[in-house]
Length: 233
Ligand code: GLP
Image 1 (cartoon, protein in one colour):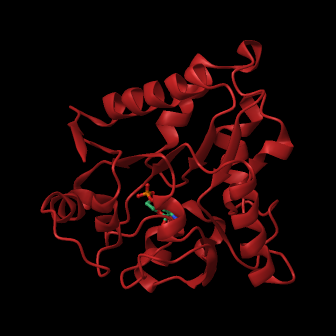
Image 2 (cartoon, protein in one colour):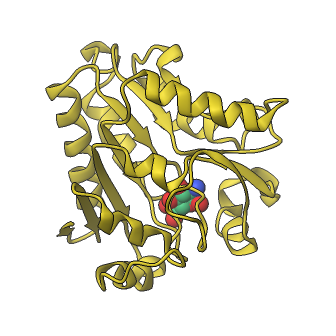
């Protein structure tokens, strides 16, 4: 695991955006796994600033978001689809058909999870995936206790995760369930970059740094992957 400790959140975002943009330059057809949450917001801002529509950066890029709430339409203001549109997709030239999120409003959620896995596999798999870190060590919506061999599925969100995400959700009433990529799905990404910043993440960062691998601490699965960069500030 490659650790980079940056002086502050702005520099962390610069570094994350640099890795993001280099990946597109190296391979214009790169397949990216993308996170939501507060942590990646400035990374997306930097990517948009460097790579507005005129540069055609994203014309062949494929993206797969890590997760989406269940029971709301993608146009709902609290959906991760809306988040991605507001922070990235509306500013760049990505083909909407290449910007994938699970559909949390699908009538058959298990079929939707299977479809999402198939779509990822059909592109040849994730090349580079960015992750945030929950203060309880969750990655995407894989809460403590998630088996490391888990794949895309419907999960029940813990009260603490719902509370942590309430400020990003209009009216604060965060859905109780989500579709998330599993830990095994994430670990199949060729490279992974984890972003963690701020006081609230310090304990989780230290636990990750300790090297102890346990399903009670989902991020620790990343120790089993050969190409992980952790950016902390
Ligand atoms: C949510 C997301 C995760 C994200 C986490 C941390 O639970 N599903 O993917 O990493 O929040 O979010 P934040 O960056 O806002 O602290």
